[in-house]
Image (cartoon, rainbow over all chains, first blue to last red; front, side, top):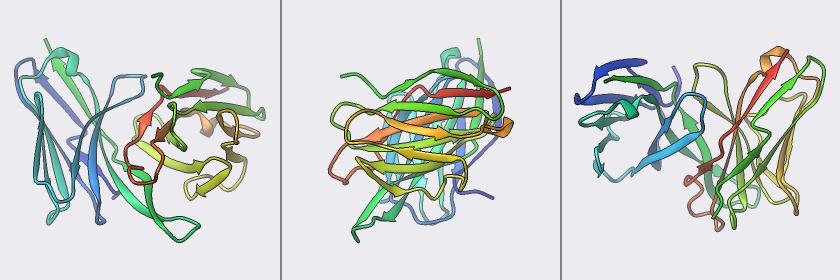
Length: 119
Length: 116
């Protein structure tokens, strides 16, 4: 399996319900981010959680991170039809650049969860 | 402040032709990344560039693919002799200078390449 796997692969709910998506990863991370992608469009950054944080909120979004289990969850409360999209988690990896320093830049994305919110 | 710009948004090429995808990072950003998204999949890292330097190309296919980020002008992802399997959405992202927040990537709208 790949770094940054989400489950479920697809989730279908009614407007007003909560949606929970999970992400698991394999290697140590510096931080984990969640993105949304509407069909045929680019990615929109939702929220970033650092490896030393356990929970973060942003509006109707709540993200948790359990580094011991190498997993994260994204909760969308009181969902709306406009929340219909694919959701991806992304972890970063550190890179040794040519000049011997350490830099970050390679995001590893999961396969995504397709969320459908029915009006 | 304009976001990351990519053009063209859609590109159709016949097998064997060349595809050139352009990416202009956000103003002031000096780090550019290219990702590929196959249908129904997540994004896969291809290459990370700074001005005039390729930092990490571990995700780039060894043949037919190349990328550059010249001192002036946009970053270019070039695919020679395209095949049907190259059909995908190609996303560019950029991050602020300084190297401290390279995970903070802003994505462009993508170029959807279709090879017929």
